[in-house]
Amino acid sequence: MFILVYVDDLIVTGDSSSMINSFVAALADRFSIKDLGQLTCLLGVEVIPNPQVNKLSQYMRMPTTDHWHFVKRLLRYLCGTINDGLQIHWQSPLQLHAFSDADWAGDKDDFSSTSAYIIYLGRNPISWSSKK
Image (cartoon, rainbow, N blue to C red; front, top):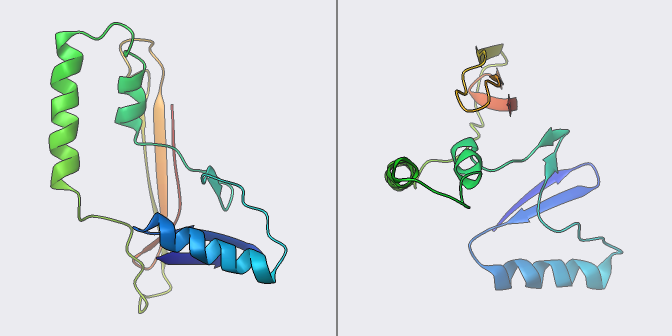
């Protein structure tokens, strides 16, 4: 189980739903708490699903063979990254750096643009965004 504390907010996550529920119940016995449900925003950054999954879900009503091939490609990618995650390095230099990218009108379906950035403090990501 992982617990992220920021001022007066807690984010609780982990592999075991029963352990998380027990922890939240123990907190509720001792403190006045409000469970906000699924995480949608963290430090002012909207938490969204994988952009490819979001894109793919737009075609669920009438999928084509191309969409099926993309689903298989996405599943192969997810299987290959199952052990990846967001790592926080305790000993990291206090150097700030950022990366950004944009794809102007890159979506051939609706000619919308995609832009993204990520900001690091040392080796740790501290802010990021991806928008269509």
